[in-house]
Image (cartoon, rainbow, N blue to C red):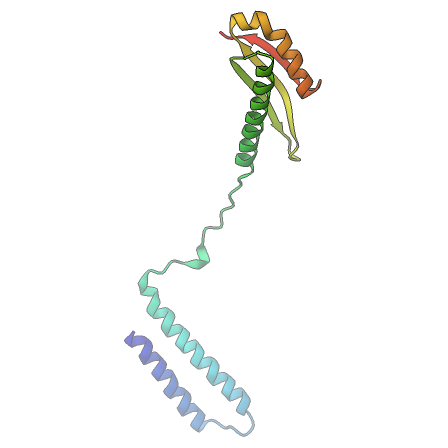
Amino acid sequence: MNEVLFSVCAASMLTAIYRYFAPTDKFAAQVKLLLACFFVLTVIGAVSGAYDRLDLPDIAQADGAYNDYTVQIKSMTARETAENLRKTIRERLAEKDIRPEKIYIDVNISDTDCISISEVRLVFTADEYDANAKRAVVLVRRMTGTDVAVTAEKSR
């Protein structure tokens, strides 16, 4: 800190001496500007020289990496969409006393962020498959439309 104060004092004294001897008639504004620039640069140099020793982080070399979260958002959206549809299918099938063991749903999200369902697979136990698989496929197809492939299979 002493070095900073010494530099500022030295610059002040040099500025004062130069003002005393410099011709101020013709170039008063230019001399004032030059002296102000000299003083400011001296102070900045002294302060930056003093703080170079303090291990301050270099702001100019900040990490500018770009984090793309689109894939994670699309994955989360697909999971949530599948879970909501799975819940609705379970509720509607339960109204008809049909209870699949598992429901698999393939959700697709395009590059234009359009969500579509390509397939719904219903997995039944052997007893449930024989009794309810065909009815379940028809009921789910009514819910999802004819563009979605709806299949039923036995659990392994």
